[in-house]
Image (cartoon, rainbow over all chains, first blue to last red; front, side, top):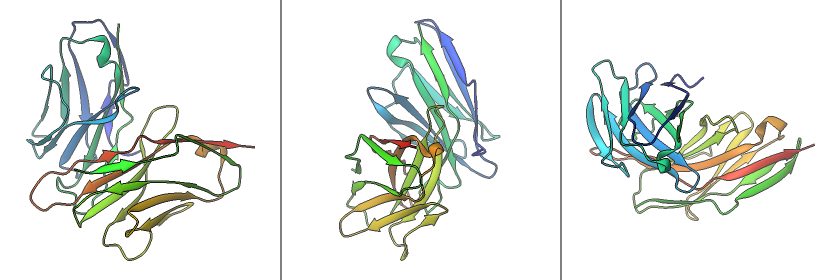
Length: 115
Length: 117
C-alpha cells in the first residue's frame, strides 16, 4: 500500500459526460501529480500541484482541469468525454515539488472507460 | 528535455534466476533521480528503487539493485532470484532535481517481464 488513495477504481461513462477523479496523497506529502496511461500514448504527465498551487502542466487537454484543496486532496475533472479518453489515470504524491531526492508514490489508479 | 529509453519490450527469465532490465537516459542537467516502478496486470504502479545522480553507491532494495553507470547514462534494474510474482511491466523513470521549479517524472516505454517455471 503506497498510501496514495484514488477513487473511484473503475468508472464507465458515456461520451460527452463529465467525471471527477479524486486523490488523497500520502500523509505529509504536499505535491500531487496526475498521469494518464493509455495503450497508444504510454504514461503521460498531466499536471502537478504543490500545496494548493499549480506548479507544472504537461499534456493536459483543455477539457480537463484539476485542483488541489486546502486539505491537500486533489481532483481531476474530465469533461466532454471522448472514446479516446479511456485510460488509466494515476495520482501520485511526493513531499516536495522540486525533486530533492524525494521519491514519488503512485495510487492504484482509476480505470476510466468511455463508451 | 529528458528522455528515457527502454529497448527491451519483453523479457523472459526462469524462476530463481537473475535478470537485468535495461534503461538509458538523456539529460543535460547534472542533478537528477532515477526510479524503477513495477506495474502488475492489476494496474497499480509500485515503486521499487531510487538512485540519485550524486549517490556514490548503487542503490539496493531487497532483491532489486540498480546498476548505475553515469558515464554511459544507464540505470539498469537487476532482479535477483526471480519469482513468479515478479511477472509484470517494469518502467524506468527520471526526474530532474531543481531547486526552484517543479519537476515531473519522465517514463520509458516499459519492459514486460515474464518469469517461467
